[in-house]
Image (cartoon, rainbow over all chains, first blue to last red; front, top):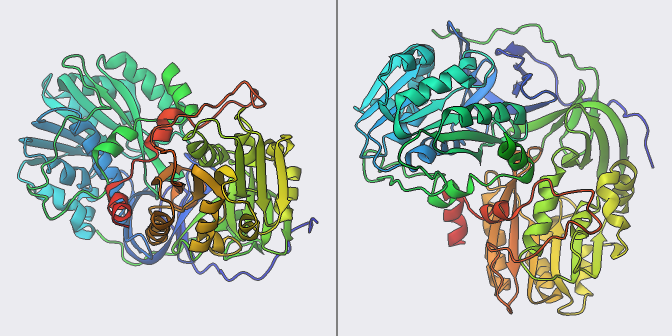
Length: 316
Length: 316
């Protein structure tokens, strides 16, 4: 039954050119392939219609391309940050999971998030008075404004104050108890975002939050990075004396097809992340952009973990 | 800021050989890439350590390879059917979603599922007396027994009766009201499984079920195949006069990283799929293989849909 060794056949695919895009990723014969030591042995590839931008900032390689079936794509150091087709899942979940877990948030800080998508989502809350954002790489903001107007629209809200700089340093200068919520929209812990996964950073976040304030950080994939998640959970249990929970959602263009979020609250009024209390006012500035992904049921469901992940997170 | 056209650089990757593996997929320079008109413009790739089997049955191309990071992989017509690393999610969910939704199932039919993984999961129920399986392609069964012993172990249960043949024809010959549950573990609706997504098939399933019996079918991805799902939901609402629900779960090596399930019940005792009533006895034959993925909370969560999918499914 076995046919033995595979016979080489003529391939329809030929190498036309190879474009390094940072990390180990490259564009070969019209396909972008996302390779990283963070997910060895696998790659997700998107067909490229046109490269719209390639550049290098002080911090990282940046690329924007028009894909065949996922709209425009933003790539940092060879890793897909967002595509127009599925960005709704990530932006809505990382924003509304924390903000719908508290009543009437007024002051919110975003660390990272230079594309503006999280700002767009925060702007849906009429209770919010002040939205600070600290993005380390100004080129990300510029690129987003140029190529992703439906995402960078978040910067247009008059409540937004953009700070270009290091999020770690920014947080240290924040007066104690300033924010109702902090959202950490970071890239992976290899590269400029590394410190955002370490204990001193979480300690600064906790200080910047009011009692019963909440933080939501991008927290990788239970299929790929259980060891990173276990470490983050352990750190957060030490620092945050309110609630500490892990949630996840589907994002097709992220490795393994999912992304997780660490949700914590400081000591003070009790926050039950699994029972949203907040209210998104869709009749404010975003009335022409209804929610595509988030709803109360998916909020609650996102905290339900497969058994293999629950075992690790519960014991962390 | 823009660097203009991308400059070709020397690639570390060279085409050593190209191996056609059916569909549009191929192995090039040691990577298997899964291409299909079912998900144009994207591909998931796995690094290949060794091709263990390549062959062609009466129905399809079959391949087994050892991957670098996902264990052994089964590929039919160029599409990944399972990997040792993430098969637990699919097999456990497609089995326990229907079987935990009813009390004390006794007779179960599997259509497809020739790898044996669903049988392995069904065998956890001590109430079950008879497990019939109808797989069209005997080579799938043989290949699974040879290369995937932890999956094909399902065939060893003495309650299992294996029928090699067409599932559509098999169902037509089943006496009315025979089964408590039917599980349709099929490949995509291009190829030998096409009929399993059509109305006459669902009508046969409904006849084969007892009143208040349940069916669970593989039902594609809400990110990629909303039009197929909409059609299936419409058909199922016409045929199944009990409950009709859609659920989904994460499977990293399936396109878009998720897979859905259509769950329906026939007229009779009411089935509320969202409130599991069943009981998996882990102390029976599978005591050495605890559940890796499924639990009651993930069962309930799997029915919560993103807003964009809920809108379509609710109106179907």
